[in-house]
Image (cartoon, rainbow, N blue to C red):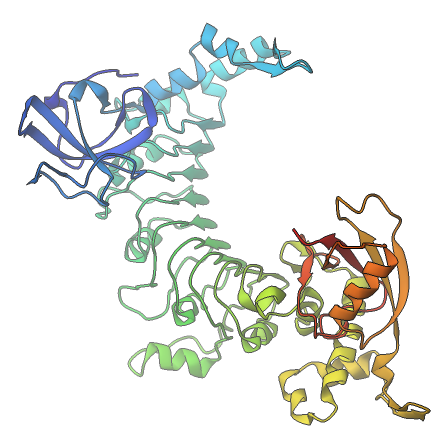
Length: 537
């Protein structure tokens, strides 16, 4: 790898990395003298934002850095302008491991001593990898690749590559990407993540064999995607994470057209706040998976044709026969700001949607006033995978019955409550659940909803020690505060103050039960539920 350079090697806006650290990547923003310091300096704006200043020093402005501490001045010999594709390939697959590499291969013994590890069959693996003409997959991540090298060099050396990972290199020009791809006729998957790509897409030929393209953290926007669209005739997966995208800006239409083969679109960790921007993707006929985790969405809805008509305006028509999101099976919405039940209920209108993620939204977090998993399962009629966990037939049945009984307990004296539960009547009839009847005893009217629930109490508190779980029959109207008092008695806690959690099937984490006035029914504790008994810290 190129180890040193003089200042004439560099030019403004060139991508470089630190000579001693190929993962420390930045952009050249200044070349010249620095007042009070002899010689020529290279001003670099570092991608990771970890440097010394904002491009000014001692009151003199030399360049504008992206942040207050992302810029620094570096001697040319401490920067590398990059190497060719084939040079990186030889480094990764031809060079023999150094003694330093061998020394790094160890495990720690029981006495915390290093024990060297030797890979069985290492020579055989190295021999196979060194036969570059047979390689079908190559990872050249963080090797400082900045150019494709000599003409036809790639074609002659690795003619059979199908998968190529170029993450974290110094590529920026699309024409260089095109030169690489043209020499790899079988290339189907390309990862360019963490390369700061030019906003001008010029010199890029059609990528006729690319089925999977990963452009995470490349600075790309949707205007550029519209240009790329026509150059990706068979694209099936497009990954665009972490690019600061806040709008789906199309060139000549309000609706995104094309992408006839696109099955998966990943827009996670962007800045999209308005669901209308996502509606622009509703006419992509082949789209099956849409990843929108960690954006800024606060409300979603299913777009009917009238909605789309308003979106496109009167001067533009759309295909009325195309059902919005007609093949969407998976919609990931985790880590947004969705806080309303209407958004949840709207998911039932997507024709084929069965895999949904709503975790880390206020509506799905009981600790922030949201609803528990069993209510989500009951309200989402077709969901088969929720928050990454399969919804079994048993879980669906139990969730729907618990949900119906929960709603019934709220209807007394509040008949308008039913408007908030569009599936209530359907589920009540489906499961044959009868209306509650009041019976008069010595203590007056008693509701059937206050019937006994079988609840398992399981101690997980360190200071309580190991104790067998207890299964108790408790009235559904028991409050969380009362249950805490009962736990103090059941487990002989003394001065220890219990902290309760509901363990739900399919949920990766138990749900904190901290509303002492809420009843078991209110918080979703049903028959055969498990409550974990911890202690206040």
